[in-house]
Image (tube, rainbow, N blue to C red):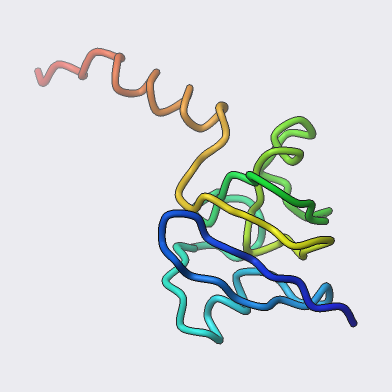
Length: 110
């Protein structure tokens, strides 16, 4: 078992996470306030942008293959190296969906 340092940029928080546990499980154990909801790699609430390092996350079904290279779903992601993560950053597909929803006209009440 190998331990890696996971640094959350902008917060000053750093945790040690083994390659056998998820980043989210260690956050919960250490009292780090990481957002999450489904815990099965679908909802993207626990998303973080990978600024440095590498993770394995084969069950992160909510991400496209390209997105999985740049974003970690902390509920599924296990470190393969030391990491720098920017929490609360979502992949472009989510940002695009949110923007589309904001620009859709509201339904008229009859």
